[in-house]
Image (cartoon, rainbow, N blue to C red):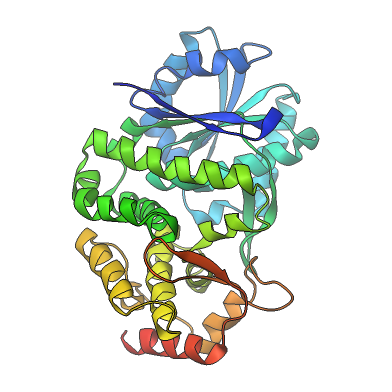
Length: 371
């Protein structure tokens, strides 16, 4: 099957996103042109390594590339100071040099943490993203946002550090649990919701095929998502303007993740899907869009079996004021004011810099009451 190639145009720091089946098996051929010496260091999600390491190692060995591996436990809690320190100290002990390549094998957690470790190691070493989840393939592996979480909030410690290459092996999605796949699908749907109504309509038609394992549909979903993100990143690398649109649903979602302790109660993508539903509900409450728009969003998410409402999140949640307090720690706060990504309709998102608190409270009150 054909491998799709997209380019993130950032001048000397530009790089390719390669999308297709079997890319882990041919990783050596893909990576070899970037190497100064025939060896790499791989930081992996332990569960992912159990499934994909043999394929990756063989692919590297086929090109004479030696690989050393360091495993981390799965889960959002891995994005911590302690795990970051472990990775950096291991890379230092391995005598990794600035011209070397570090490989991140896993989902968004691994990609974010390894990218941050690469950013601060020797003031910057190169790294390659090998995303194995749908969420990482369409979002976190592209664009150079790296970081870890704090008890104060998600991704509050980090750096912009672009990868040298992204290899999105669609075959890796075949071993992904359905819950994780649907969490990643939330980020796919987000692209349609924020700026491409035709893409969202395509997803309404092909979402079931994507979830069901259709390889061509998955490649097309990843390609269209990455193309949109690559274009936005090229225009606004450090999120001074347009790139903020990629945070649709995230102000709500990050607060919900913090409220659930970054635990298995709520995956990142599940927070995004619930957050997108809330963002469209708030938009309708403010008179920015018709009520049919949030209803359509929620209907598609429901059809896909995704987390859609706060009622879908197990366990206790803070009251409205507690959730608003968590939002106030979000990176999108400017001059003490919350910024939300709202919408005039599907495919028509915009940055709202000063949202009145009363309608926000009303939306959260209603969502919590429905639990």
